[in-house]
Image (cartoon, rainbow, N blue to C red):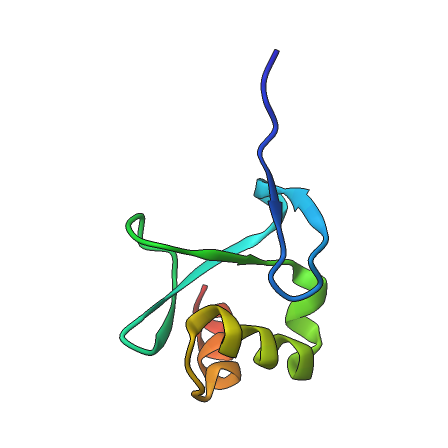
Length: 79
């Protein structure tokens, strides 16, 4: 029997299958897709649409205040 990995969205705190979430990380105050090394966090697709709540959670996840919504748009516009 296969084990399904469950992860928590940092914005809404709901639990989802890992495959349904977007995995990101902060390196040097920049938001990037997960590179395979270091700490990361997950955001669900519904929370990506609610920019105000998402921005506040990104401040907490990245331990920094920056313009993360613009960076988030660039990440998901490119791929």
